[in-house]
Length: 410
Image (cartoon, rainbow, N blue to C red; front, side, top):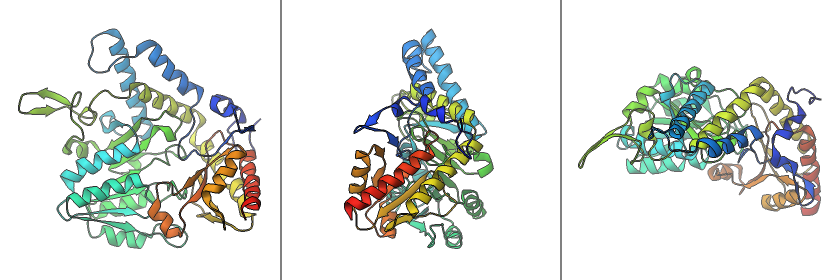
C-alpha cells in the first residue's frame, strides 16, 4: 500500500526501529527531524559491522584491519562526492558536522581571505552556526557583517542582496533552506550574482540535503556544508565541500597527526587535500554510515522524497490553518520540511510539553535563529519538521493535538 500522491511505501517505517515505541503511552509521532533524523536499520547495521569486524585507525597501518578500514573510509568519501557531484574526492573534507565545517572556514578562510576591515554578507535567516563564527572572524579583522533582509513574505530581498554584493565583500555565507521557517532560498541565483562581483559563496546545506538533490558543480558554489544526523546518518559526522583550488590556498584549521606530511623540530609541512583539514583520528564508522544513509536516500529517489515532503507540508498546513488563533510563519512556497507556528496567547514551550504528552515530538524555542525570532516579534516558535517516514495521518494528528493544546492553554 502506498500513500496517496506519494510513491514512498508506508512500510518504510519498519526500517526505523526507534519509531516502534510509545511515549507517555501513546505511539511516537516524531516531528523533530530538522534537529535530528532517525537512523534506518541499514545505517545501524553498518555501524555494528564496522566495530565487529574492521575497527582500526585509518591511513596509518599496514595490517589488514587498518587497510580494510581505510578502504571503507575512502569509499565513503567517494560516495559523498557522487551524492553532491563534486569534481574530485579531494574536495570532500569530513568534519563533525555543519557547525565544525563553518568554523573551519571562519578560521581558515577568515585568516587568509578576509582583509582588514572586510565584510561578510549573510542573510537574516541564518542559523547561529552560520552567524556567530563569522561574527568572530570579522571582529578579528576589524570588519563587519552585512545582512540580506527578508521581504514581508519571508523571501530574501534580491535587489538588496545585489547592492551588498556589488560592494565586493570577502564572502557570501547563506543557508539553502531556513531551519526555522523551511523557506527554500534561490541559491543558484545568489551564487550567480555573487560571482559576477568576484565574491565566493558558502552554502549551508544542512536542511537541504535530505530533501532535494544537490549538485555543487551546477550550483557553482565555492563551499558547501552539511551534517549526517539531519539525513538519517549518525551524529558526529559532516562534510565540507570546497573547490579544490580554493582549499589548496587555505591554511589548516587544526594541527596534529594526519594533517602533516613532514614534521621537524622547528617546522612542518602539511599533507595534501583533503587530509590537510582532517587532523587526528577521523570518525571512521560514522563516515561509513553516512555513505549508507546516502544509499538509502538514493534508493528512494529524490522525486519521491520531494513529493512526499510536499504532501506532508500541505496536509499539516491545511490542518493547522483551520485552527483559529494560530500564527503560521512562511506558509507559502517555496519551502520544504518545516512548518513553524505559535498559538496566540500561549508560550511555545508549553505547547511543546502538551504535544509531548500526546506522543508528538516537536521542537520549541528560537531554533538557533534568535535574530530571526526578533524579526518575527516572538521569543520562539513551535516547529514541526518532516522526514520520509512521516505520514499524512501524523500530520493530521499534529493538527488535532495543537487544537487540544489551544483549548487547554487559552
